[in-house]
Structure formats: structure tokens, C-alpha cells
Length: 167
Length: 254
Image (cartoon, rainbow over all chains, first blue to last red; front, side, top):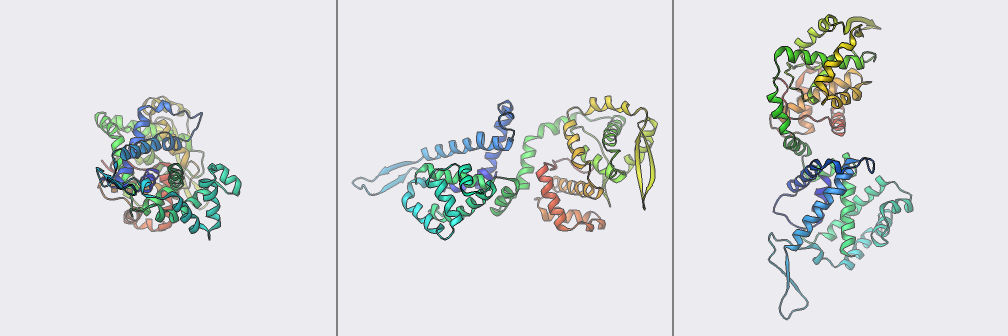
């Protein structure tokens, strides 16, 4: 439920349903899907059922949901005006966050915010800019995965204000 | 930063917050999500058919009693050699095993100082064990304490066929409880059984579960429960959640 809640929260999309209820629905749907076909979980490949539920079912459900939501939006250009985009026909005041962010500016802002926090900046640069995998980041910096997760949580606090133009 | 990189941050953040039980709970609490309420609701949604089938299989009084004796025999057989296994621990283990079992056992647990206690049943178990030549039950002096010892007798194997017949589907859950508390001291098992009973009572009343409310129910149980500090109770609640020892909607007494 925490995974679902965080994924939905960061999307910047407003939902008709309360995020608590929505994340609960996603968690329950994940469990139901697993129970429909429990044989698909192969403990010999990976014996962690929670990881399986998160990455094989839940994440896909949320991605599908986000794709569906973004497809509900129509984006039109106003006639004669090439500098603006006007979003129309969105069902529940949705605005695709990706259309609202100047990515280059955002990345510069985050780096600026992290400049006096070198332990967080290192993680951000390796993971986001240099495309390192999480394990590679941990190896490069000589930190554990729990340390990595802790730093990501702190980066989120900084990045949230930059990535949440609707809030 | 492309959309892909943005998704990477979102995924990493979601993973970081859900990387373990403690992080997940803290994150949800900080977002004002009462996880216990959702867990209870989820369990109720996923398990309703079990409750219905339990009602259909109501046992006669004698059948019910015998099934409980058989379960008690299994617990005693697995634990009798442990120094920590005495009458109180036995009672609490029996309570917990009965709670996790799907067998529709009719019980008569009431709130006593040492936790949920079925006085009537526990008084008869000694004579029942002896009558069937499964266990001898005697009080012995262990230092300055008096302890109840359970010693297997010649017909100890006699209960097993009944246990396998009655509890085959519940066996893994029962063994889980037994192994979880095999070496535990009585105090710990008493606390878990009491928390479990309080938690179950809160759920059955439809109240919003919280650590604070469980603590209140524990302290209201009996004045003897003040021996457990709030921190101890909170830690034990967290531990129970980690182990999946979370009550469903069965009520304390029937």
C-alpha cells in the first residue's frame, strides 16, 4: 500500500478518489490478481513474495492506470498561437505533470538544492544523470541499500517541491 | 530530464518508502493512513468465505471439546521439554493456536489477570490427558517457584491420528505459533495473547485500531497488565504485525 500511495502521490495527478482509498484498491487488486494465479509465482526464481507482488503485479497495474489516465486528456493548440498548449476535455481536472515541467530547469534546480548535501547529490547524479542501477550506485559510493533508500527519501523531500507544480 | 528519468525517481521513492515494514508504516502514518484499519478491511474482504464455512460446520459440544483436547495435546507434545513451558504459557499458546485455526471451536475465554483464559477447559485438561494416557500432569518445585510439568505417557502417540484428521489444513499455522513461542518466556506469550485479544475486540466493535487504543484496552484488561510498559506493548504490536499475527474478525467469547 505504501508503494502504491507513493507512486500515485508523485504523479501529480488529482484523482476523484482519495489517494488512501486508491492505494488500498491497488494493493487489494494486486493480492486478488496473485490469488487468481498463484502458480505464476515461482519461489525458486525469487522467494520474496512481497517483491513479486510489488514489481510483477502492482507496478504494472499503476503504470497501466497512469497511461489510461493520460490518454483521457486531449491537448490542443490554440489557433495561431504556437507558444501555448491548452489542455481541454480532461475529466477530473487532470494535467499531465510531464507537460508542465521544464525538465532541464528541474534538474538544475534539484542539483542546486542538493549542492550543499553532497551525500544526496552523489546519489542523484549517479542514478538519474548517469543512469546507474541502484546496486551500482551503492557499490560506487560504498553504501548499503538501506542507506540508498534513506538518501532517496531525503531527495524526495527536496524534489517534491520542484516536481509538484500543482501543489 | 526525460519522462523515463522522472519515472525512475518516482519508482525509487516508492521503493524506498516500501522497502521494509517499518518504513512502509511510517510513510503511511505520515500520510494519515491508518494501516490497521485497511489491513482489517482487507482481511475481511479476502476471508469472508472462510467465516461462512466455519458457521456451517458447527460442532457438537463433545466433538468440540475433544478437538480442543487434541490441539492441546499437540502443543504439549511439542513443548513439554522446554523449561519455559508451564500452565500459563500452555494456556496462552492454546488460545493463540485456536485463534489462527479455521476449526470452528467454541471456546469460553474470559479476561483474567494473565490474559485470555478458558477456566473451564483448562481445569479438565489435566484429567483428560491422564485418562487417555497421553500425559502425566504434576506440580513440581523449581527453585522458589512451583511449575506444572507435562510428561508424555505410553499412549502419547494416540492423539496424533486425530490431530492429523482435524487439523491438517491448519497445521502450518499452528506449527508457526508453536515455533514462534517455543523458547519464549511466559511473560512474552501472555503479552502477545492479551494484545491479540484486545485487538480482536477492537476490530469486532468496529472501532478504529491504533496503538494507543490497544494500549488502553490492555491496561483496562486487569491491573496486573501495568507491569508492561507502553513501549513494550508498542514494540510487541510492531513485532506481531511483522510476523503476521494480526487478528481477524472472530470475537473473543462465544
